[in-house]
Image 1 (tube, rainbow over the protein chains, first blue to last red):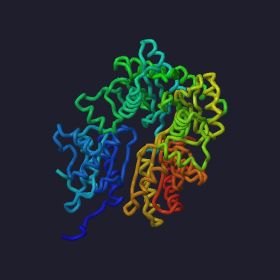
Image 2 (tube, chains in turn blue, yellow, purple, orange):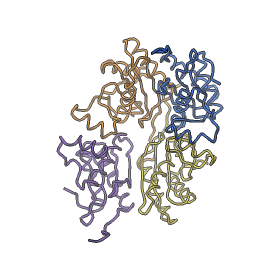
Image 3 (cartoon, helix red, strand yellow):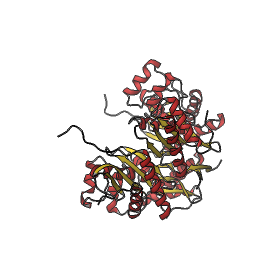
Image 4 (tube, rainbow over the protein chains, first blue to last red):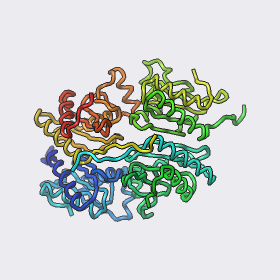
Amino acid sequence: MTDFVATHRLTHEATMKMLAAGVAKADEIGVKISLAVCDQSCQLLGYLVMDGARFFAGRTTTKKAMTAASQRLATGYAPPENAISMQIRMDGDFTNVRGGFPIIVDGQVIGGIGAGGASQEEDVIVAKAALAALGLPEAN
Amino acid sequence: MTDFVATHRLTHEATMKMLAAGVAKADEIGVKISLAVCDQSCQLLGYLVMDGARFFAGRTTTKKAMTAASQRLATGYAPPENAISMQIRMDGDFTNVRGGFPIIVDGQVIGGIGAGGASQEEDVIVAKAALAALGLPEAN
Amino acid sequence: MTDFVATHRLTHEATMKMLAAGVAKADEIGVKISLAVCDQSCQLLGYLVMDGARFFAGRTTTKKAMTAASQRLATGYAPPENAISMQIRMDGDFTNVRGGFPIIVDGQVIGGIGAGGASQEEDVIVAKAALAALGLPEAN
Amino acid sequence: MTDFVATHRLTHEATMKMLAAGVAKADEIGVKISLAVCDQSCQLLGYLVMDGARFFAGRTTTKKAMTAASQRLATGYAPPENAISMQIRMDGDFTNVRGGFPIIVDGQVIGGIGAGGASQEEDVIVAKAALAALGLPEAN
């Protein structure tokens, strides 16, 4: 038992890399999305709305990053019949829509990345491309 | 790659025309409704409650305008089984009830118009009449 | 003692007249404002943002209409040293900025009109013009 | 009298340029800041927190961008004795702290940029560097 545990923080260089890589992938596959990066406490570190992205997508995207960082899982893992109850229980910040991934360094979740505004399959491709910019593995 | 994209803003003359045309149509078909007009960022530009309209209709109406402006689609497009989850995910501002239409100029969505308080069919008739006052086509 | 008191409600025709008259006066004196009309319960009946008006003005304008309807006085009546305390006490909806007037019919306050976004003197001119469209006297 | 007014939207390329230029300037002068970019309706388009920046700075920074976009002025313009009342009146989103600038294209305000977390003088330097990345003039 110790008082402190060594961990890592995401730098803004990392956040900017993720935003840039996500936008590049979105451009490549021809979609307009928004991107959000949050820290291990689910607080926003970076955010970007592509021109032409849906206004509400920004809200969903932030929730994807928060959900992945909190739950330490890629979003979309919950049984569909549980989703609405979980959304309400977590004050509206939980989402079961795919496109969010935890950011894992040395076995610890230090944040989350979310992409939203296209189809769930496309959102996943964009979020994975953002994560790959850091050379990190995907969670499940 | 550019820093700026040319677009249009809705003037208050246009907003007033839409409110007046919506009320005229509501009077013609004998319903009491509320009307809301928002900009491309889902912020309210104009609002009118007809005397005799239901109090809660004002809330729904604003959400119809916001949803159409954000999603770039006429409201009511989502599969019914997704609607409640989407409402929570978009912080209560999404609605799947018909009566909201995007305002499209030169192929770009620059806002939304919503009508609410009567039946969905009647709300659609009123919202379309408001949109027609600007000589604009309806989105699907 | 009776159970009910006869009163009046503002119709949407009246609300539209006020919005139109306020805009016409704003155009005449060359300012960009927003206008709000509320009922005797401080609930929004009509709202219009002129193109070019400041975004935050919409919030202030609504508070002017609410304050006038609630307090049954033209806004700006409070001693300046009391204003902040009153703003907090009334959950942020009270304002001491001029440009709001109660709408008085047969000696009863049935709503409020507010104009905002220009100087206080100009806001007052616009709000009075809106009120005059109904042929009503100004409060104090 | 027209229904539509031509204007511009900020692209995400422009937003990314501003974030990158702001961070570069902050690095150069040795401060840790957060940056926010919003559109003409005060809605967030981009956001970045530098590693080491104060948590609350993110909130202030967003308000600087919103205030500049709404009021069409660099932040800090209000007489100090009015600031608290204005903060409440504008629902907490107004700030009188320097470090926010409107983004002006062809004479129209199409958004705002804010920097926060260092001294006001340093925040101003960072925000101006972000704005300069677009080759735009500063407001007042």
